[in-house]
Length: 431
Ligand SMILES: *Cc1c(COP(=O)(O)O)cnc(C)c1O
Image (cartoon, rainbow, N blue to C red; front, side):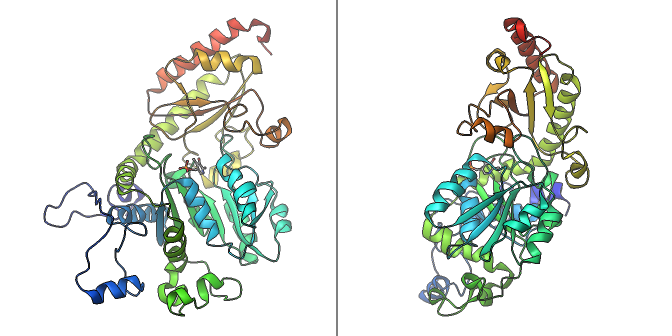
């Protein structure tokens, strides 16, 4: 099916006594077994099916199938948050502990996870300039077990050269894990460009309404985990599995089963069924929302670029953006809801933000409501001035997450706030 149809139907056809059209909410912690024999088989993981909702739930399972379909993956596991999707996807690859090569432009929560908590676990991360292909290769160590990057970065919307980076990883038998939160599968399917595993904060574009938190890990099912020395957690016999391996039991689903039966089971960041149902409803309108948001972004860029209060707009649809050419092949329909606006002077930042009446100051993206934030003092406040510049930001950069309002109203709100800020700070006029 095409993506628009999968967004509405994948993973669910009305069934059961009442055949509800909406994927039903199955709020149950546990599931009855028909016999002791069935319980024995399910607990030994020899028979699939639901036993206890920490590791699987029928509503959550529909979401897993739907996101796998949208990403063109074979299997998926949903988690409580995007943060736990990132953590579990990588813990499953780096037991030992091992080493990760990661892009230096990542979501702040991921940077905290890598530099603080993963460091506590002994997992080492080398950060590289994402655009420097030689740097990815040079950072590989003998025990590197994952490359990690975002398909589209936040807030500058840098588009990753996925085919080039995946080629380097695969030469060394290293899987590529891509955070596809900002772009969503409507704008890019990383698995089609060489990635092996995709992670999402479903909180953002997938759920789309700022109402729930959730995460998803999607596996292509094609990475070769058969080397027992390199990937013992997947291909070597384990006591926990009666001395069989996940690969023997689950084949192409082995990685997903590792995430589910070990990490989700042992650590417990499980998605609530009610959240899964909300995310499923959100996904139904994802393609329509993405198209509207892209049209609005195009209008805003077109009408705002010449405003004297704005020094630059950073977006891959502009030829001035470093990702302009890559975006044409990798994200031809847009990069998602984010737009970075650099004001003419840092003194305009507070007056512009406080002058807005429709657009809210809030730290989220992918909501139906348009939100603005100031990375230097909010999401990126722990970065030094040099780190900010290295991230392509400065103290005048604002991040806009464009929602579903009429773009004419967004434009009017931004224009009046910019005009007012210039009056309040006249010395910066024409800066
Ligand atoms: C928000 C976000 C996360 C973390 O997701 P939560 O659902 O907030 O835990 C991870 N990656 C990216 C790119 C995000 O935007």
